[in-house]
Image (cartoon, rainbow, N blue to C red; front, side):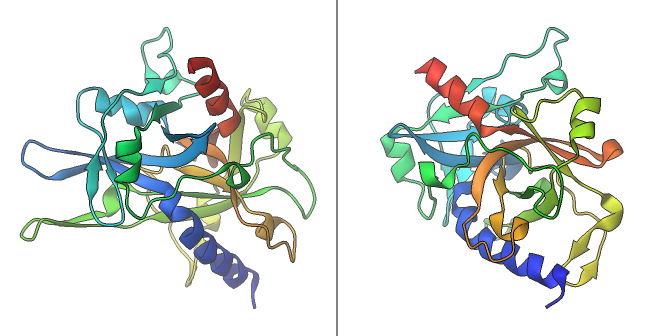
Amino acid sequence: MNPDQFIHDRVRIAGRYILPSVRQLIFITEHGEPEPVGSCALLWHRARRYLVSAAHVLDVFRSHPLSIGTASSWHTLEGEFRATNVPATGKREDDAYDYAFMLLSDRDASALDGCHFLTADQVASGETPIFNGQTRSKYLAIGWPRNRLNFDRRNKVTEPENVAYTGAIASSDLYRRHKRDPRIHLLVEFDRKQMSGPEGPRLPPSLDGLSGGGIFAMPGLQRVGDVAPPRLVAITTELWPQHDLLVGTRIDLVFAAIEAAA
């Protein structure tokens, strides 16, 4: 088996395992049509169930009801979310942390058919990344691009499609250059000229909509023979195409905010 095929097989298996925990967020327009906004991850923390996402994604729902994709429908959630503060510039794009979370009621959580809330053993808080050598940390980012929500207007049926991307951690030099702390942020290489799919080299897909989705550690890509399942390490927040980097905020920071708000 060639290396590309090995990677794609592992990603396909991992996707089936984690997609029930990474869901698409939309609002319904005044014309009754779905408007995709971004992605989110679902998880347990201290016996409570949470939706976590990027702040710039949940900001949209300050003026629209928030609906989440389940296995069979779109369910509109009730309640409020907490997000990082907008910087003094007044621009969310200047928010270096860009995360938000929402405590779900038992009623809402029970209505999410086909969805799974990640448990503590499925989250890699406190991960120590490896920057060098063959065992460099490898990651899988997964979410729901906005341009892949197909809507059949006649039958009022939606067919969302997800995208998964794998890459290695950026070098420690790049962390220093971009003034990012690896304990807080996750920088993943995203070289558009080296993209490959199941059928070989390809142009990079649109990642607009992956924001708020999960980034998972992939032991099976990091160490040959490691059969440990993927574990959530971060929430996708940005793509820096000019630097060939995908950016995330580590889940540890989100947990700290949840604890502070409790």
